[in-house]
Every structure is written in C-alpha cells, then in structure tokens.
Image (tube, rainbow, N blue to C red; front, side, top):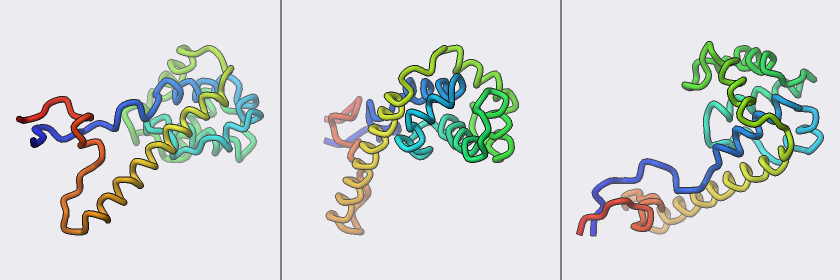
Length: 161
C-alpha cells in the first residue's frame, strides 16, 4: 500500500485557532488581568501555531516589558517597531483593522488563562510528535527516507491499493 498524496497539514486537532484568537482578544481587552492570571508564564510565543498570532503575542510581551498597556493602537505600533508588519498575510498596513476584528469576535477577557493552557498543551503535544519523528528517523538510520508520523494511514485521505 503506497500513499498517493503526502500530508501537507499538521495532524488534526493539534492546535486551536479559536484559543489563540481568544487569548489575543483578551490581551487587547484587558491585558492587566491576563498578566495577573500569569498568561505570560503559561504560554510562550513559540506555542502559537499561527504566525500572525505568534507575532502579535510577541509584540504584547514586548509591550509588557516596557510597562505599556496592550491596546489595538499600542499593539499595532509594537508590531511595526519590531519589524513584523508584512511578515504574514494578517499583518499588513491594515493591522489595526485585523486586531479590531479579533476583539469583535470575543468581547471578553474572561478565560484567558484557560486559553493559554490550551495553547501550551497543543504546543507540548506538537513537540512530542516532533521528538517521536526524530527518534524514528534516528532508529531507521540516516539513509532511510524521512517519513513523518502523520504519513501513517490513519492520517491519510486517499490510499492506493
């Protein structure tokens, strides 16, 4: 049995765009509460799967280090100062509108630590899979073709007989 189509997406359910967007909205609505709930210790920028949200969270931490309140204008300014505008499709000259759209989805900062825990958990699980892939590659030897774990049949849509 050979695969017709290699996987191009991450394993299913190994990130939550909803939790990532909800946490960013919470920071924009009430960053003081988020920081008080230890969000900064629960989740790191690298835990975010989506680049634009990872960069926005990095910029929020940058603002925190400078004791600047996280708001739509300050976060957009921080992204610009850090040279992150234009690095992804979401972060363009219309970044403020994009941030307002995220806030409009959520309207609340309630649950920010729960959202942070979800993001961190998915990140930890993705890390475990990367480690397992590296271990499998090492066990197979350097001449073996790299086969990611998500190439297993249960993660494929179509199989050749």
